Image (cartoon, rainbow, N blue to C red):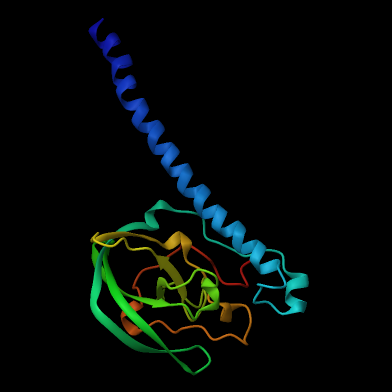
Length: 207
């Protein structure tokens, strides 16, 4: 009899936790899907699209890896003590100077990784967002399932906090992935991950 009574009590304790987790998980998916839908609209809009007119008229959709919480990572944030201008190569063979604002450090698959974070208001991929912080990176899907010259993921550090959310589900392609008139940033050597980030935007051909 005691065992019979204990089961409902256990369920009463566990169920709210399960429900909260489910709501949180769905909220994350809704947020990521909202951003993807907004980009879809941007790609079709003549005034904002990086596509040529011919491409835009044929445009159907972008392609993404499934949303995966495994790639929503809490990372340690190390802001730079002073402004550090850094020159990065571009996919067209040129150069672009950005400000290194810090670095993030996180663990994945038993290994510790560190990625440099940059700030820029020059990038068309973040138009209208002002001065943003982002990470250009490559991984083991680059050139196969994802863009060959890498992707960008935005981060939003909070002043005074030593951790931030690094969500690879929000990784996007540079405009150079769609139109050769644009130049994408080539990630610095330290921003090349030794695992597959099967998360975020896929190659433009995968649609």
